[in-house]
Image 1 (tube, rainbow, N blue to C red):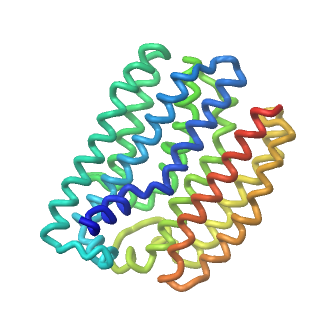
Image 2: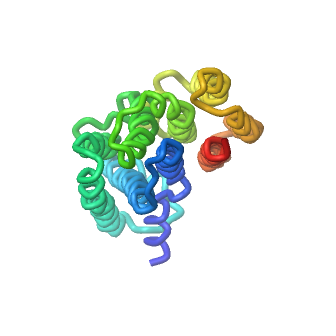
Length: 292
């Protein structure tokens, strides 16, 4: 039972839920500034985002197991292969349940905001499921980093804002770009962590395709691009001058980048630290919006 609990916890990856919490909260903060905020909508939008991210994590675990990767990645769980199979089907159903729980939330919000939100929700579900789900599995086609930028970044921020306002906003799309970069950065860190194992299993992630050294350069470029967006968005009046508070998280992000040079077993720390960078940056950005 202890091994089962650890397996479910590992599949769920709660530290990665910031990838959903920050975009939904950022969209909610933008709605608050524009005078559309509603507390019930905020709770539902946050729950919906966390459920989608949870579903993606759980189903991703299942398809990685089916591909034959996870038995090599998780020997410390001490779950026999035959029992692991039953456990993985439970994890798969739990992932579908997470997606299923978003349906009533999505229908309620669509009723109040408009049909465009339903389309956003369907795109989000399909994008999350087919990250590793067959027949597309776009993670294995070097598309994960790009699609996650739009699906878990831009689309989630804009969708959260639309749930409150029922209105399109170019400003919110521009506002979403820095945190969208950091959502992609979280995926890049995950790919670099697993690059040796993914190469062995012939998975064509972006990091495998461009190689370890270029993947490290990409990590640094994406990290810095989030911070370089701050003066641009401030200059065009999308962000207040307070947005420069986000630079307080930059030293932590650069220290995380340096950890990429560690050997494979010690490189695992990079993923949760990247999630922390995303969370710190996002909180500082949201705070700067609310105090202007």
